[in-house]
Image 1 (cartoon, chains in turn brown, green):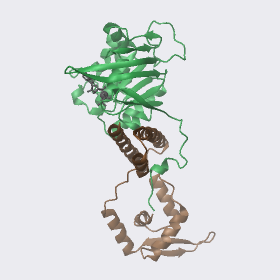
Image 2: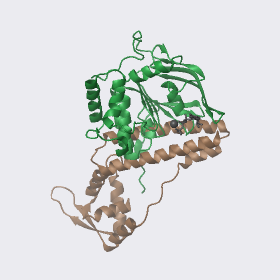
Image 3: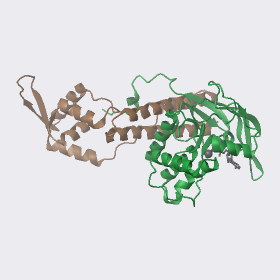
Image 4: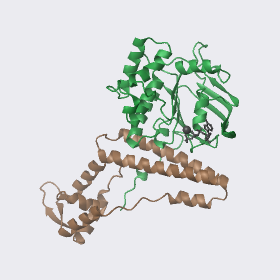
Length: 166
Length: 262
Ligand SMILES: Nc1ncnc2c1ncn2[C@@H]1O[C@H](COP(=O)(O)OP(=O)(O)OP(=O)(O)O)[C@@H](O)[C@H]1O
Ligand SMILES: [Mg+2]
């Protein structure tokens, strides 16, 4: 959460609730909804670490709000975050352990079949999500497509397992 | 022209609603590869309901294309029976199968099989003409389909001038031009990238919604997940089957597949 918030603040100063709204608008419903409490906690930590600086703005009818902006250290952190490649996603290791530890081939094949059905159902849910999600939200659509391609890779791997074990 | 397809096969008594469009029992098919027998299909039972969208998945060489070819009469089984509607068809000769394919079964092949020196328009109109439609009817059906598949303006191109995705759509148009009761599609998004696959997916879903019965072979889980039911073929046998909507929805929703790091 730290670096996405810093990257959002790099676009301009904002308060906690605004950050939550921009994240939601950018990423769409496919992405887990950012938790406002978590955002406030993270902002507090970032301020303590000298990455951002907060200024209280008094409001007449509502409680004061704190507007944050990046410090030079925060700006550096965003720049180096964007320069680094991200870690690759992990294999579904729980399934892998089940497969390796299952008592015999018959159980392994049953596991593979069950897992395939499960992935296909997830794929169907993702297709539905892609259909209901705002078509014009490019990032959201790309995220769903990415999840689908990952799932396809998992399915291909299941097939390899089956070919190898049968 | 309506999208209501005639019952399969034509001329028979009207089949009861509950009667499946395809029924196969104990299908076995052995290919000869340089004199060596290859058992491609080893005893498959199958039932496809009217309006159903069935996907067939499985690894390369599992016998998926062979099974589809058996259902379209493009290959003959060593043993086993096939019914289309209320007609037993595995005993049909080449000529009767050819009539069936013209009137009631549309086939999309794994490698398009478009006629390379005919234009897109002619490729699509030819099956309609062969089925006995007038030139005017064929032209109208072709125009409707190409518009539907987003291929307007490409009528005068030859297949070699089209992208893989466009050729795939022409193959689909050709298979659909006679409003077949049954569409057999072998890897209809075979060589396409993710975006092209999405297009084919949209088209197939649209036709399925209109009541088109589809049997589709695919490696692509996204296509497969648009079907009502998925059967998994392995080494010539059906080893698993998934029907959608049978698993309860995940508690955490699909967002669980898309994980946010703290
Ligand atoms: N015409 C043929 N002559 C000889 N052998 C064949 C022929 N067609 C298929 N086979 C063999 O039969 C088996 C099943 O082939 P089939 O084409 O049905 O597999 P598939 O599941 O469609 O594979 P893919 O996913 O690669 O298209 C394979 O071992 C293949 O080599
Ligand atoms: Mg094949």
